[in-house]
Image (tube, rainbow, N blue to C red; front, side, top):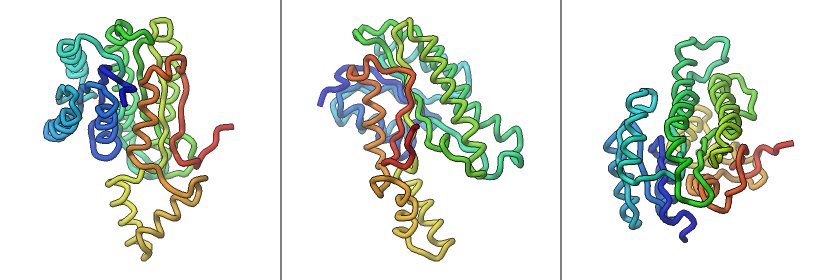
Length: 264
């Protein structure tokens, strides 16, 4: 498939699970990748995967909460490829899972730095490159949000604060950048059935004295499809926004949750 043929995608947050799936699925669809996260070893492994699919990969170790390193990421991407077609914000931080009134301001600030301020500044810094893309449909920014924005459980409230803010940021940037031909959209996954959550389910099972499958079934029971999305499924839905098929789509948030939440 060549849905993203020769597009240049900057992927911020190349971790296990979704980050890895986003990089590989984008390469399968014909994209070249600029890979950014703090861990160079992980970036190099991802670059090998991208190159294994015949695409180019640029490794740029980056602390996205540092302004100088953010600017360096933009400079490196443009110097290597000359253009940028899409920026995907996948990096995230989670504050302690306790009621929000009990959380320290420092823990909330740390989550906001990664989940909100870094996407804001990276979007602003990449705007010129995205606006100058030679592709007819213009550039695209994709925020990886979370279905936590639909939840009111106390233990998720600190995370919801930052992801709710990110949702509003995406909407504001869609309006601000729209006249420059830049589209801004969000993806909201629920539980993704990948290694981190598999280990979490194992822990929940051991604490409750039940099996891993019992925990999976409990989490999946609230979905219409009675299952959880895989990283690859979430990645493919995300990359639709990067493609020319979404050329008239901006300011939206797509739930990728097997039907757990329905927008009214």
